[in-house]
Image (cartoon, rainbow, N blue to C red; front, side, top):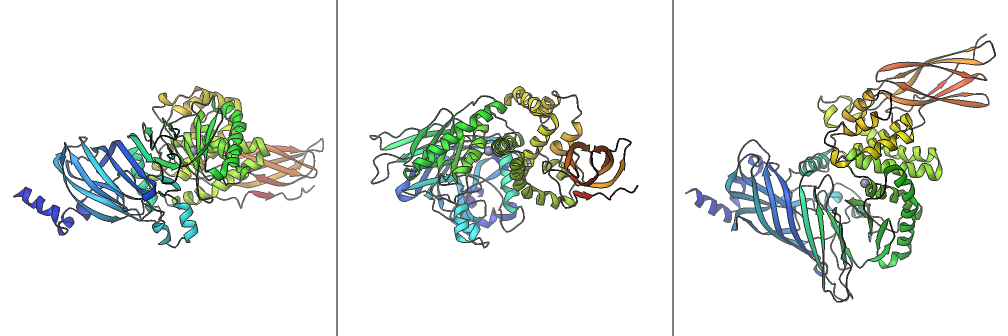
Length: 575
Ligand SMILES: [Zn+2]
């Protein structure tokens, strides 16, 4: 009887509701392994995928239903377990995790319930088109041009570039609905998926046939760790590229296929569209120039970086593993800045985003400092500050768990593990000096990074100064940002006619920091650095040769929640 009900269910759309909505736990399974073959048909703007995936039940209860989701422009063809077709209901599920604003969802009844921590291997097939589609953005009011430059993914005869989860679900995922209209709606869902998948593995092979009218098959690139492009031979009608992510980490698998030209240099390979050959030379040259700074800070390049051109000149750049996708029409002056980030990834590897990405952004600030001075680096960091300072403000009424969940060691929030982490590295550098920090980096080995305290310990080993409070406030926990102000300042003339200024600096925030302070006097200024712990005050004395008139705290190197209270006018001395 039971099996008959299931058979009927397969045919009846009404039955879909039996297993849908509230009863479904879409996030019960982690997809621990992908082994996929993707056939790209640029002329038809299609792809067809065949392969195997392994699902692990990460809930405490046995699971009989599994959910697989791909982009709504793709259709499920078959799903098998143990060589036998499984019963599934396919339907459209609204979610902004895909550029189309919806997913093609297969709700599968497994042959046997999967025990907690048990796994099931599924053989899958799906296919369909991947067209330029920014529905999820235009329906919340994003102007079309901007929406298309953000959601630029598509397969077409001229150019193919497709990013994975969060853009196009070209491989199966399983998530609750994400809504861009809600604050953090997409981010939370995406963050949960990525952290569940961080330890998973993916192997993909791509077949791309020659486009009608073209002399050779397109160059296909994907962003796995063993990135290797197969150079097109004039004779080959189909080329195959392979790509593996072991593990996925937080990276998003992506692929491109186009009639690329190649510029090859010792540290980098640049793939360019035919019309951007000059820009590709420029990018390669900028990368070669930046490589000295990068190897000086982070050691020798372990892998060769790969950059590939995007056809839309205003497309947002994207990184996937060792592959950087960027329109080479971008401002040539920015090439060095971009390359510094990319090369840092080639020199230094960490499974922890706040280290891997935070340091890549830190490398960009170092690059600007070397090129145009410290202020230029601080201005660049300032552009990043606004992105997470707003985020941090929202936690003025924090939930107790935010402190730990949003910490740099745990967060999946890009603003935090990129921008805030960059500041943390810069502050450490200002506190310890370049040689100490470089030594800590040299001592770091990704395979030994088994616990969050590994990197902080390597840094602590380079200094006698206690840094525990700093790591607590900035790395292990999210205490928000400091907020410095001059509480009081008194000046008096000394016997030898100098001026002694006693300054009390207060930190109203819950994160401590070492902050630079400048005292201005007629004819000059004097700089000092002082450590002001969270919710406390520090007193320093500064001697100036002429009467001081102003104190400025923070040159922009410490991210603060309020920068409007950082200048203090000193009352003229009364004799
Ligand atoms: Zn990066």
